[in-house]
Length: 425
Image (cartoon, rainbow, N blue to C red; front, side, top):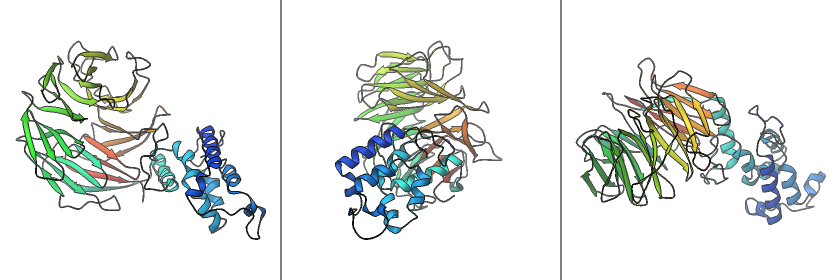
């Protein structure tokens, strides 16, 4: 990816040239490169003048190269191949790529995979190059939900939640579950992973608490109708229901939402939570509540059309969040700027409801549509969709839930679990 407006291999100008120079300069001053690979002995041995340059100077020179030039330089010799493979040189490039494991603030979320390898795979995400597969099928239509943590994929199937071990290639899983979490009398609607527990909400109006590595499991009544959504952070559970209430904390403090609650999420600061409702009344479908008192703090947006319910909502930072739903838009909110208008929005081009949205914390978004299992990839720096993949043709089904790593995307439709492999397309 190019520097100073030079087109890179993705056909776009890099927007992180200043960051790249700053990072390389700081690393050279601190001698960080010497900790990542073998020492570069200045002036050692015969050969071209390049070999005689100090390591810090060579790092600075390489910091001006884009991914294509850096890769070509590494083909000159084994010595340069090792040198140009350092994470230090690839981090500025990776931060401008799609789904490379870096957040917008530069935090590396996938430290166990070399950065150069992630940049290579990110090109497949941008170009839509992947191999599709089906991991599981079941006989009757469900509304599955899932979570991805490490090498395990947790999938709700009717009244139970199954934990599956993913194979090392990421494109298959071991058919026999590692664990099955039971207890609900009706289908599990949503669940989250919280520390060492699975917290679930079911159609029976109950909330289940299951220990991941153990047999401990309890459930308790929470709502008069199905629990459509649940979240848990810091030991605090919040839930929303079709009965037009949200429940807060262990004492199950009841909040009258005046509308059916479809989605819910706790702020990373554990100070508030947001509810997404059906938008069948006169109130905004997105509202933020105090996590301690349950008092309404603010509502997001205005002039929502009736029925524009919010089906999924997630926080990216304490002050920014994403939402999607029946109005066919992904919306990005920054409450520091305004609570009345979203900062950015992306429209589903076929006017389909959006059931779920996920973010890499940086440039990439992925959404699941309501017809024919369509998964869309978005670059939030652009208005239009990058790529679309249909997973359930010819039978139409929503994508009820999707999750992705830096190499694979997993999507659950009514009768199957699908995978998109971007590592080995």
